[in-house]
Length: 126
Image 1: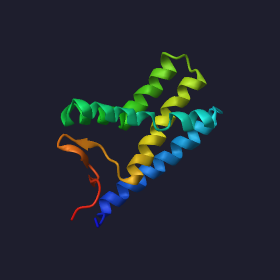
Image 2: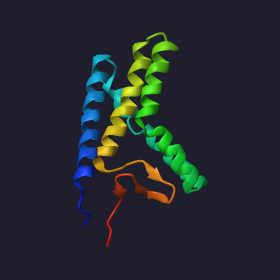
Image 3: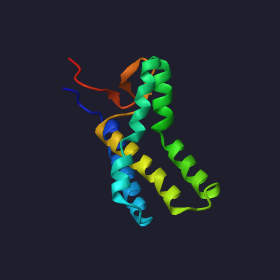
Image 4: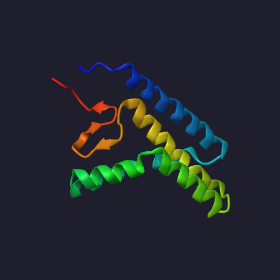
């Protein structure tokens, strides 16, 4: 069984805190919780890029699963979307997804394979 380092525990708690903040912020826009549930796992469709190999798969997965993308989408929705509350709420679904992923230990991927992440290797290490 893997033992988590103190730094990894902090990073996972940070992800949980950001997930909670994004869920709370999503609620402030009074959008459908059914929509939230329906779209929550859509960022994981980026895993399909692994069919093109680990290098492309990691690049696409990491592009979708990082905070810069979520913040950029928020500002795009704010400026290009005219401040539409529906569009503004969508990046918070992505943020909640990223935060929950981090809290569960699913980090950004290394090019060496899907299981190699910045939070450690996924699965059991014997």
